[in-house]
Image (cartoon, rainbow, N blue to C red):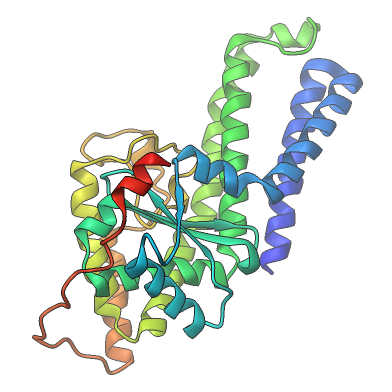
Length: 306
């Protein structure tokens, strides 16, 4: 089913490009657009994960310079019967995390410095389990392709705002058509991101709860992450990649199209669902103090230098 959805996204992206190519360049425009779409599909499948990691300046770490974090990922990957993913730290103070890659054999998990500083070991484990659940269900492929798709749509919309890109055919001079498409295409991209993101977040939350056997770890992490995200927006965050994060990287203090078309369900609803799952699993909170935080201990100088 996930493979079918992935193919569907790639086909839809191709059709969008071909339609735009025909609009502005007729048959020659369609051919050029088809070639561009084919190249973009190839790139999206094989290299878009590297593009996302590079965009956020992710630095790959190992058990030497991030022993606590690496140990958590390794332990949970073994427990989930997954290959060990690559581990990245994003040098940003805003707390967040995401996973990327085209399959479990080529997966990467990334967390920000802010997340490691904010959360304790148990909460970090809940977050990593959430991301590994995305890996297990191939959400990372669809999410990464959706990010490339949204970026391409935004690019097309920007071009439409400035006029034709192929020749000067008569119908390219219709400003109303170009304006309508410049408005509709970004909305379509956001709707697609929502369709591949919201329900998957619920599924990943449940997967994390079942993997750790402690839903309260993720509950606590989500609340902390949201509270800090409102104060510290993630630098260089883009609408095209927002759906990949464990929580929305944008602040919600002001009304905007980004808040109207949220790619994530509300944290309060996610917490409620985890609470219901906790009851279902017969797991009850205790007054035990959280473990001393040590997963956030890593070589900052190494991250900064890279």
